[in-house]
Image (cartoon, rainbow, N blue to C red; front, side, top):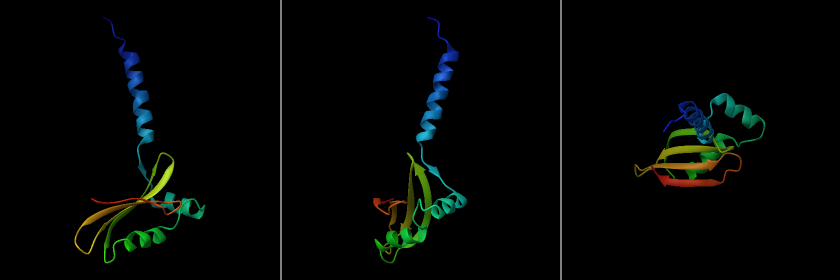
Length: 103
């Protein structure tokens, strides 16, 4: 049986490009600022207040803005007063809670 590796390589490349376009991408500060100025996303401060308010006494560990499937979300990682690390994800455009789970 003869297999055309060239065709297989092309298929693999197409799948790689397609799958990588579906993956979440972290945005940098300049991109976040531009989106905020355009009114596409809410201010990080507003959503941090919302996230931290869910767990009073918590401390912020990390906050990232990511784009996945054409939607923007803030992923906030914090440690509660009890020492539990939580991951909170909020829609960056609406502020709607997507998830709040122990990390």
